[in-house]
Image (cartoon, rainbow, N blue to C red):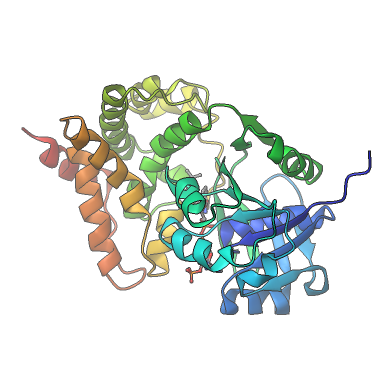
Amino acid sequence: MFEPRPKFAVLGAGSIGCHLGGSLAVAGADVTLIGRPAAMDVLREKGLTLSDSVRPPRYLPPDRLAVATTPDAAAEADYVLVTVKTAATEAAARELAAHLKPGAVVVSFQNGLHNPATLRAALPAARVLAGMVPYNVVQSEPGTVHQGMPGTLMVEDDPEAARLIRACTEAGLAIEARGDIAEVQHAKLLMNLNNAVNALSGLPLRAQLAQRSYRLCLAMCQQEALAAYRAAGIRPARLGPAPAWLTPYVLRLPDTLFRRVAASTLRIDAHARSSMWEDLQRGRPTEIDTLQGEIVVLAERHGLKAPANNRLVALVREAEGAEAGTGRSRTGLELLAELRRAARP
Ligand SMILES: NC(=O)C1=CN([C@@H]2O[C@H](COP(=O)(O)OP(=O)(O)OC[C@H]3O[C@@H](n4cnc5c(N)ncnc54)[C@H](OP(=O)(O)O)[C@@H]3O)[C@@H](O)[C@H]2O)C=CC1
Ligand SMILES: CC(C)(CO)C(=O)C(=O)O
């Protein structure tokens, strides 16, 4: 049976939005990127380049890009991919509400646990699905987004996701439908506990994860999170080579052994950084409250403490207060000493 080509809109055309929307557009999909005026001016002028460490860069000239700065541009979209940072979700959804066409599907490709619920509350007539991006994308220069590691996108298993999955697959974006998306989101949150460690280290992800002292910081955060998950009856999905409960033990291995055991984890582009590092660099608020902050709240709700996560919330808030890009970087030993001090009974 003939099925019309779906139309896509990306709401929040930054790193992830340009990567997803740009990849679909390169493959010939009908995509409108909706973003801030300054960022969209760059795309109108320079076009969009998509790079990764495997393929040659792919370039979309300005005349192959549909860009807009207001959500009315999503009026004809069958799928709206939401890629704003968490703090912007509610406002973006409210702006979008008046323009969505009946039957439109909204997919959150954001970190954190609650963005799909925020979208559902603001868009009661839309079908909202949760999605997950497991890999890193940075704007290496204006108009260029770089994917720094391989990975498979995930989306909530739902018949409404079928055309999105087909379009992504045709565009060379590996994507998997998951019946356990809540568990996937909880597993991703465990990974994202590294965002704060990475941002405070001032180092690229690969260099940071190669140092045991930073990995011990992450292991402390994950251990607290896993205890809170256990108390709450949450069983995070297995996303990588090791189940979630084993990861803190792997993180604690000495460097040489870690390099061997976790070779796939270290398959990260030498320049890739966490999205939180990028936020601090640009003087933007971070997502710390919905990452480490989420664990602190969950732990408290179950009569537990999460001092390492709590300390990282405070350190990132402090860094947010510094002038863009001027926050003090910490060595792994410095950060570890701070977290251990916080965790001392
Ligand atoms: N970058 C990464 O490697 C990864 C990111 N993620 C998650 O994906 C989500 C997006 O992250 P990322 O792409 O890095 O974020 P970016 O900040 O790069 O992109 C979001 C863009 O959306 C813009 N924006 C915000 N509100 C609106 C609005 N109402 N209308 C139009 N544009 C708007 C922002 O502008 P402004 O800054 O002015 O608000 C910004 O340019 C986050 O939840 C992040 O945690 C997940 C996996 C990896
Ligand atoms: C992929 C990962 C974990 C990379 O740090 C990320 O989600 C982020 O930077 O926000």
